[in-house]
Amino acid sequence: MDKLVKYEVFVLRMVLALGVLMSACGGSSTTSETQPAETRPASTGPLAVMEWSGYELPEFWAKFAEQHPDVKVDYSFFGEDAEALTKVQSGFQTDIIHPCNSWTNQYVENDLILPIDTSRLSNWKDLNPVLINTGQVNGQQYLVPWEWGYESILVRTDKVSEIPDSWADLWDPQYAGHVTMFDSGETAWITTALALGFDPYNTTPEQQEAIQQKLIELKPNLLNYWTDFTEVIQMMASGDIWIAANAWPDAYLELKNQGIPVEYIEPKEGRLGYVCGFVITKESPNVDLAYDYIDATLDPQAMAFLSNEYGYGASNTKALPLTDPETIDLMMLDDSDVISRTFFYQPLTNEQRQLFTETWSQVKAAP
Image 1: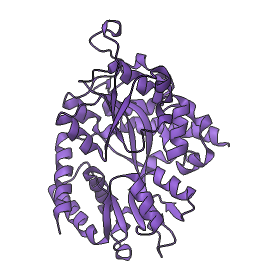
Image 2 (image 1 turned 90 degrees about the vertical axis):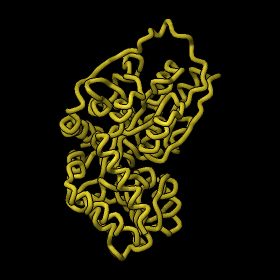
Image 3 (image 1 turned 60 degrees about the vertical axis):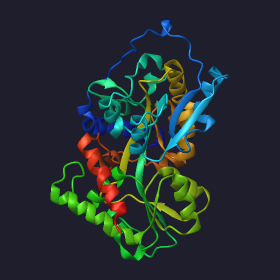
Image 4 (image 1 turned 135 degrees about the vertical axis):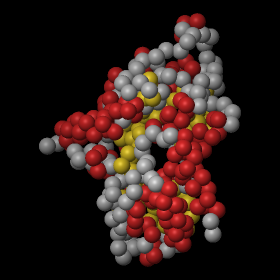
């Protein structure tokens, strides 16, 4: 069976597996802004985009640049979802944000973003329906899915005598001083809960205390907390870090391209999985430009560039024929059971968000 056929089988299983996971989000929906497009004044920009570092590359929005050669795109950056939400809640002005699906309902509950009028996106019809569902809240589409990927453990195989096979191995003293973890309360909580055998989203007070204590116990093994995937690349290439927790596929792909001996493992508890995409803020003065920008990022060529450059899965199914076979292997797209073995982030409640954030603050402040 060739990789394209295997991928089609994978997508079918993905629809079944993730469809169950995200069924609480409701059915598909198409909405429109209160003011018809033809009555709104033309947007002149600049267009403000709040992004993860590395996603500002011109290849991702080339069609927009062709369509609007005189419009400037201004980027601001964030290191994790909690930071982005806090900035917008505090009054930071932007037109587009690139959050992950577990945070979409937080933006909706705080009345920060617009429903998406999917009829204004020419590439919408080609998006994976499973990924579309992850961007819905109460039956309405608020997030336009762009990429999906993994978080897992990245290992310098020439620096360790034993390669970890579990999230719990992050605490192994043989790695003392050579571990880095993503600086995210949500990620740290989920990772530690899985290592302890807990359901991360349904914990008792006793389990919550155990998670916090376990994270404090990890500190002797840590060299630092990372906030940007380029940090992981630099620290692993230098040999300072042997184990990178919650690493993304882009770091793995870049290190392999540099010839660094690394392995991107699949922990026995499962890799973590996420779906991220674009939302339009309610205060945006450039809604028309925002739709054009998002549609440009969904172009098959742009999406294939994402997969080939960073090793992520594309939301546009037409990007597959343009995707490097190495990326298909990296993402395990020819493994029809990979989705069922992946622990996908789930939508957060306000209570969970507060718990994760407060716990992380206390862990980082602990000696």
